[in-house]
Amino acid sequence: MKTPLASTRQYGLDWVRVIAFALLIFYHTGMFFVTWDFHFKNADTSRSMELWMLFLNQWRLPLLFLVSGAGVAFALQKRTDGQFAGERFKRLFLPLLFGMLVVVPPQIYMERLFKQQFSGSYFDFYPLVLQLKPYPDGNFSWHHLWFVLYLFVYSLVGLPLFRWVQKEGGQRVLSKATSFFEARPAALYTLVAPFWLYFMFLLPKFDVTHGLFDDWFNHAISFTVFVYGYVLASQNRLLQVVQSLRKVSLAGGLVCFAAMLVGFSLPSRGYVTWLPAYELEPHNAAYLVYFTLKSFNMWFWILAILGFALRYLNFSTPFLTYATEAVYPFYILHQTVMLVIGYYIVQWDTGVIPKFFAVAVGMFAITAVLYEVVVRRFAVTRFLFGLKPKPKVAAAQVEMKA
Image 1 (cartoon, one colour):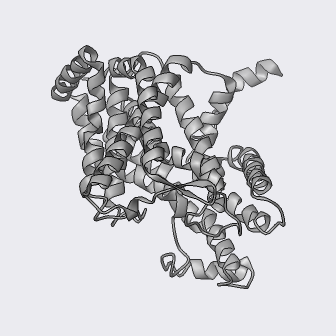
Image 2: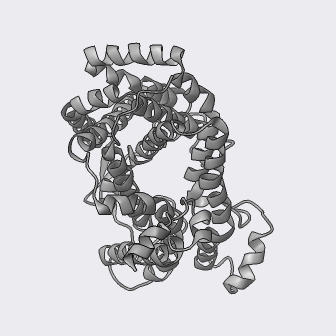
Image 3: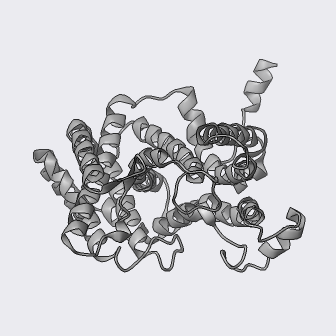
């Protein structure tokens, strides 16, 4: 029994994916200029820049995992298990391997240069990568491509559950749940409960590492929203409930984030400084309030963004068609380009804001050129960056045009 997906493509989900990745790129650019740990930093940091980055940090990655889970729902409609696993291997694992051997090493090289941990040329440095000694002690890493690795793992680990949802028994359960949420739309907010439990009981024991085998809190959050995305895309009626709640979700997100700012920030040198969560003693009153707000804040913003996108962005444009294909190679390339040009820009004798825009604009421009000139035009580079083969123009059409 097939999952009752929407009869027409949900372009709102495509817009969310493109916009979320664009925001992620700006977020990564900002990491040079805030007090948080990064590969290397600008000498001066901006407390005020942290405010909008803190806002994005509440929901940006969970939203991406949710949209990715929705994509799996559509992919499984047209593929057997073997075809799906093969497609995930080609589009996720092979680009990950290529990225670890080719795309990521320049990032580590620039970091070693900046921290004066290496002084030779890149050709002198690269043999150290092939020693396959894990970063940070060594020079072999997936860096930002941890997201690609996790998508690959979640797609395969979740496959039995996803197939069960498509079968008759799963469809009965999903249909009853959908009817329940249609009759009581606000009950959709109860799906925040797993996130609250993860914050309460997993986060005190497991830091976020992006290391796959020791990242259990991050896995719990990310895999849950990945499954949520699959389920939402599997029932068009659920997407309608999300859309109907968009204003309430937005109001809830605004209230929660404001409460977090007011209740868990401290004045410092004229700026608002976020009180780090690790300064809260696990399971005391402040910890309980903070992570209750954080759990609801994340879920409210995810539902609000989805709801407004489904309502107002359910259309396609030539730009969306282009960007939907480009966003994955952009993600693979952007941090390498950013760190290479950032190495030089952070050493300029100028303020934080000019440097931020110089890095952001330069990174977008160079990545766009690499994508347009190198990645999308050749079969081998399309394959290495996880793109489908370029459509061929029918010979008859070519002859008619001639």
